[in-house]
Length: 123
Image (cartoon, rainbow, N blue to C red; front, top):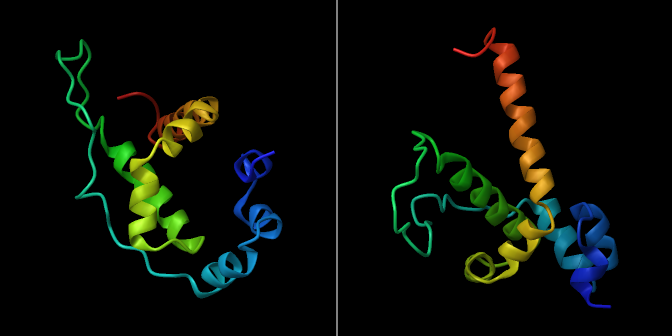
C-alpha cells in the first residue's frame, strides 16, 4: 500500500502521526511556517474554447481561495515554496479532487444555504 493510500482523506494531525516525516510536519505545524499569497500567480492550464452558456461574475473566486488553502496546507506540512508549487502543478490535485468531489459540492451547498439564511433569502 502506498503512503498516499494509507493517508488519503485523513486530517493532517492523523497523517502526521503515520508518515515517516512526522517530526518535520509536527515542527512545521508548531512553528506555523509563513506562506505567501499565490492567487495572483495561478490560473487554468487551458482556456475554454467556447463561451459557457451560464456566465458567473465570481466564478473563479472560490478556485483561487481553495488553491491558496491547499498551498498553505502544503507549507504547513513542511513543503518548501518550490515543492508546494510543483505539487499544485502535478496531477495530485486532480486525484485529490476526484476522490473528494462530493465534499466540495457539499461545501458549496452549505455555504450558499448559510448565505441565504444570513441575508434573508435569495435576492
